[in-house]
Image (cartoon, rainbow, N blue to C red; front, side, top):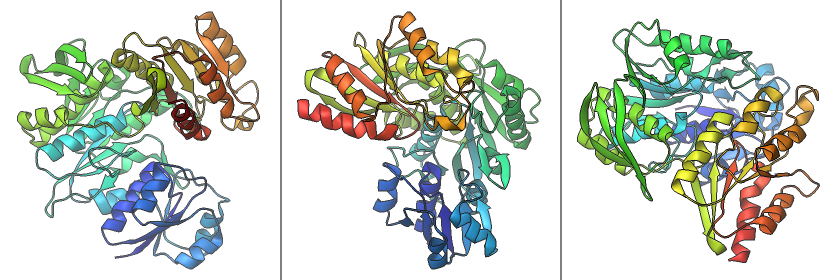
Amino acid sequence: MSSIYFIGIGGSAMASVAVALSHMGHAVTGSDTQLYPPMSTYLENHNIRYFNSFSAENLKSASPDLVVVGNAISRGNPDLEYALDQRMELISMPELVRRELISRHTSIVVAGTHGKTTTTSLAAWLLEAGGFLPGFLIGGIPENFGDGCRPSGLSEPGFFVTEGDEYDSAFFDKRSKFLHYRPDIAIINNVEFDHADIFDSLDDIKKSFRLLVNLVPSSGLLIVNGDDPVSMAVTANAFCRVETFGLTGEANWTAAEIATDADGTSFTIVRDGEAMGRVSVPLFGNYNVMNALAATAAAIRAGVSFESVTRGLASFRRPKRRMELVGEYAGGVTLIEDFAHHPTAVRLTIGAIAERYPGRRIVACFEPRSNTTTRNIFQRELAECFDGAAVVVLGRVNRPERYAPEERLDTALLCRELEANGKQVFAAGGDDYPQDIVRFIEAERQPGDVVVLLSNGSFSGLKEVLTESFEKKS
């Protein structure tokens, strides 16, 4: 076994892969800055030693056989500069996953702008319910497993399920991560514009997805969102079998008689016009019905029985930070955290929360943090995606100095547009941020409020300070 060093070990995928390789017997360490839960806690719980800084001294003391470079790491990073000077062997995280974890196994890759984490978690859990002991890499911590990554549990060739991110692989490899995973079965949930820091346009993103489609062997399978014209367009010239899933049109996999209650959603799975049976899943929103359909199609192709699918869906637990219930407090106030940051994901998440908590007021706290939402690319879309919320709290724009004023998200304009749409709006960002958000919510909250935190980052610790405030009131 070898010693492996991860530069940028705090990323969700990087940390998960580090832990998995440690369990395989490799000596693993790494470095990062500003680590926060759940990934910092995850590393510590698995006894992964890491440096909470970047410094050449880190690599000198670790003296690894292999250096994994996270895709957030760029030239000028002290660890990276030392590794280059010393001619250490460098590898990207996705290439490491292909080499060490996917290897000889049947590769199932879940791609798309939204829903990747939940769909990958579902697919892995359905294979687990069928007794296949799959390996997996998921961009979060799936509650059913407790780990974001694990090797296949079978000594002979089995299955490995990967969340296929379209983001680039490393500073020296600008290909989308999912191009390393060589899918035998690929799911494409949807294709929209995102990641404005590395893609110029939707057409640019479509090129990457077409390359992914072109990697699926003729004996493989593409499972595609038939309700999304862009997904259908990028798979139009596939060399393998294509099966569609959707809630409209003539999809191969669809759902009938969808019903919700306090515990989740139930529906009948229909395949090629024939009802397979009724299932229940503890998730909300039609987008999660779509996720379940896609995962079911992959599991059935892998050989999982429908009986096992039914059992797996019923026992599924959503990944952390996907409509995760943080707590319930005095006055019936509920606090939820979600990873949503793209306008489409925000809209769908708020809609699902409204479905889960009918008749209750939603207070949506949104942090413009991603490389796309900090710019004005989605200026109009952000003004329209909070329809289900009564109150919108805007966090401060993350690292606004990266963009000229004319490129930056105009939060003042966004506030005016949200107010014109009938929302109560609070723009945070004072000297005591995020305590200013806590004071606003405490002053304005009403019995039964559902407060949802929407960010792909830590929101400057808002969850922790808000939880502390709510607990005091309780």
